[in-house]
Image 1 (spheres, helix red, strand yellow):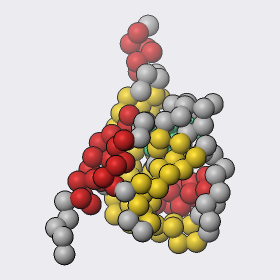
Image 2 (cartoon, rainbow, N blue to C red):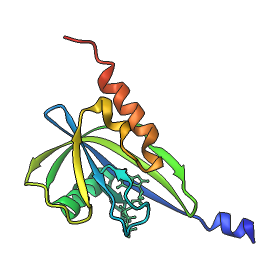
Image 3 (spheres, helix red, strand yellow):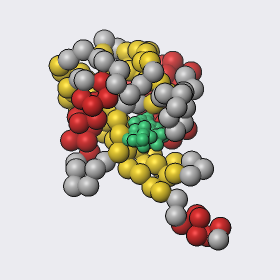
Length: 143
Ligand SMILES: Nc1nc2c([nH]c(=O)n2[C@@H]2O[C@H](COP(=O)(O)OP(=O)(O)OP(=O)(O)O)[C@@H](O)[C@H]2O)c(=O)[nH]1
């Protein structure tokens, strides 16, 4: 039975956007009623059948926040097993190209400097992504 339960754990593939603006990064707070309630995440969502990751991300940002984005460099995908769900996150560094943010799915957003991102209460799957992103932007030599 336990083997059956383990093998039945759903695995979802999720594209997420690290949106940069004026040196700050957008983080979004999940609803209290959602799975992983009141955890911070990067906006995005599950890949639909036949969809490319970049296409998924552009669709999700319109659906969740009403904005168009340019999808830039990818970071390393990260897989994490929650109690009932395994998630693989595919992060991309993005920017908003059109629209003003309206929160259709989230409780709140905040814009933070990369160096302080990890201080929020993030969904666990995001930990390695935040570390890699911080390293990539903070390790750049000063001009
Ligand atoms: N968008 C996004 N999802 C994340 C992140 N980290 C993380 O663990 N997840 C998980 O990846 C899944 C994303 O699915 P989703 O956004 O399409 O769906 P959801 O759980 O909010 O609602 P739904 O399943 O009712 O559509 C959720 O299980 C979410 O908890 C992240 O940084 N961004």
